Image (cartoon, rainbow, N blue to C red; front, side, top):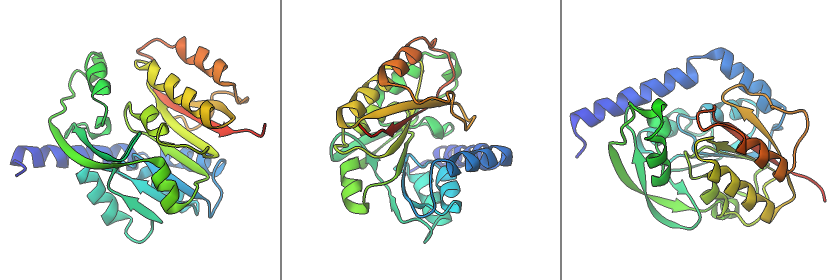
Length: 252
């Protein structure tokens, strides 16, 4: 049974996330403009790590068909309530290298850093910016692969992955190239991004760009090779701002 303290912490964490992701309309406007440049109406999109659904909401408004994936119970409940009937699909599961079950490590008061990666938790605990974060709950959730989701819903035009350190593991569960993929990079954990990039190059001819933080614009006018991006990422100090790597399939 969940204690009163845990319920209050979860409610506080949900409220915090709603303020961060829905309470800054200028950021949402910039996100909409950015997504409109890469996603067309009617295209299928996967939102892996949907959290409170801010990205799914924007994509739906652009006319995309969205499959949202969120294993964290409080946020899964919120998404089901808010987006009932609007989503093409919703999965209350984690996504990983293989199907099964996995422990979800939850920070009730700081839910954006909930993760299935114990290595992520142990690494970021050492960072000054995470000194106030406590992972106070653990729940076991079902886990599926990207291949499973593709088989169930079809090949998406775009797949966004934001899962706090488990990005590479998710991509190892994909055997066919998705045309456009975005995954979070964390400078303090460079091996996650490098492993993800290596995996993508093993299944498709990808070129890369990136977005810093919530700026919603590409850093470069030119899409780069894997080697170029790996050098760029390797030169970042651990305390540098995180962001998203975008990987686009190019014709050979």
